[in-house]
Image (cartoon, rainbow, N blue to C red; front, side, top):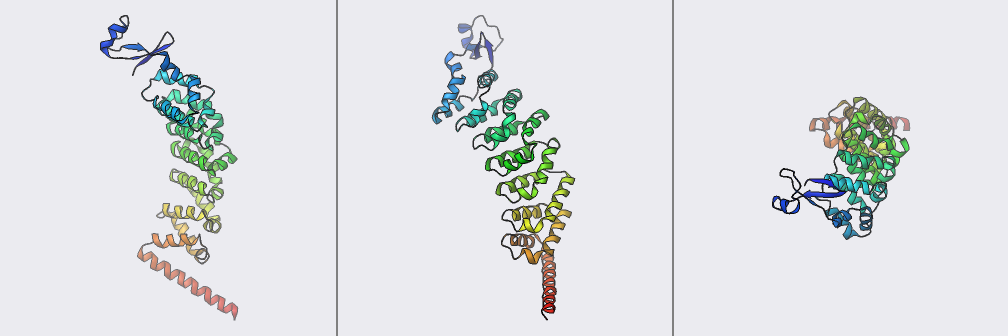
Length: 318
């Protein structure tokens, strides 16, 4: 639907048959218009929008009214709500309206919303309602200016920790990792790597790390991760959530040299790992991933190691 401003009111496309009757003076060659009513303009006024958020039914009807609206109407809504976006996205009903609005915005319109929210993205992303529009802005981000505005709230160690360890913030951090190119988040990446031992021991942090590793192609980062994991192997393996992280790495890197390093570590520490409730799952996964020949060799090695240890204990006892 084509829309324009005319004498501070909106005009929209209508059927050809109505053109001459309503607007005999408009010459648009096949594009004909009719003035939008004041009632429709009033629908998207700031006062009406804000009042709708107090009622779920009205809020849903307002969301439906966004379907098929023109670029000019979206501009009107953004101008009406300027300075109000942060309060709206943290509203139980308002966050859905802004999320739907972001869906239909063009790049320049989304950028206006992003600029207004950019200084408080960290605070909003850990909010039960605010995180959804933030995720939408991340989802549609497409250039370096948008990437840096989104990341500027997370170029801080403590903020990444708190967001990654919170239920809603973790979703936003994962979305940042997925949508923003690796080269555009170098400082962010270096902080995540430093947080390996903290995040891997948390139910939400584990998912952040898994997403981070899935979208990392930098070999230096992978090398740094495996070194941290090997240096803290027992404590991570025996942790309620850390063992899931080790299992993820074992499966992810099974056929790589990092996978071989993990296998050797598991075999070397097998007698310790098998006795712990959490780390024993890692031992089970190792056997599951091995083929029959590898399993035989592994069982033989473990038995020989056990026999050597028993003999050593007997000597010490004697």
